[in-house]
Length: 252
Image (cartoon, rainbow, N blue to C red; front, side, top):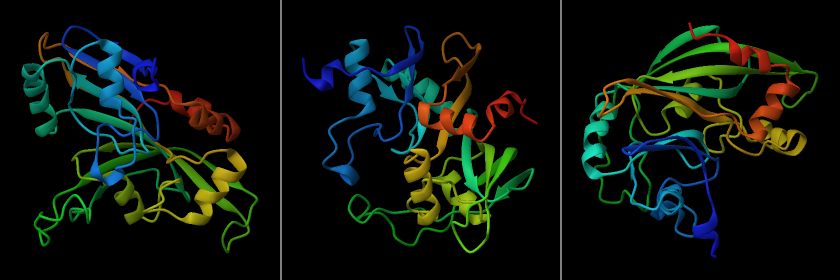
C-alpha cells in the first residue's frame, strides 16, 4: 500500500455531512503551484481515509497546525461556506511570539494582498489594502537568560488569538505589525530566534496552531465546537516554559 493511501490524520469530528481533522504543521491543504514538488496534501489524505470526496471549507497555511474542516458534499460546502464568507465562524489560535506582548488588544491594520509571483501573475497588482482585524490576549510569558540578540536575556509570550477577518497570513502579519512576530515564521519573523528554537528546543515549526473552531452546524443548526490538541513540539514547549496551566485559562 502506498504512503498516499495509508497515511491517516487525526479525525476530531465526523458525521454524514462534515469531517474535521487536526492538520499537522508542514502539510498543504491541497495541491498548489507554490509547492510544486510537494506530494502530500490534507485533502487527498482525508479523502482516502473516509472513502469519499471532501471539500475544504477554509484554509490553513502549510506551517500552521490545527482544526481543518471539510464538507462531504458540494451542497453542504455551499451551506457551511456562507458562514466562513460572512465571518460568522469563530477561530481560536495559539501562538508563541517574541517579546512580552500586551495583556490584550485589537489589531486593526488593513493588509495589502500578498501575491505569489508564480500563481498570481494575472492578479491585479495594485489592489488597495483590505480591512483586517485581529484580537488577542496574552496567556503567559517566559524570560530566558540567553543573549540571542543584543539584550542579555530573551523574552517570549504565549498568546491566544482570534482573527475577525480572513486575510492571507493575517495573524502572522499582524503580530509582526505590533513587533511581536511568531516564532518559526520564516517570512515575517526573526531568523535568529527561529534558529534557536529549532536547534535547542527541537521546535523547527511555525508556532501557530488553530486550536478551536466554533460554527453553526449547516444541517442541525446546533452550535458546533471543534477542538484540536497541540502536537508534541508545541506541548513540549508548554511544559518546558511552565505554560501548561495557562491553557486552562478561559477566554476574556
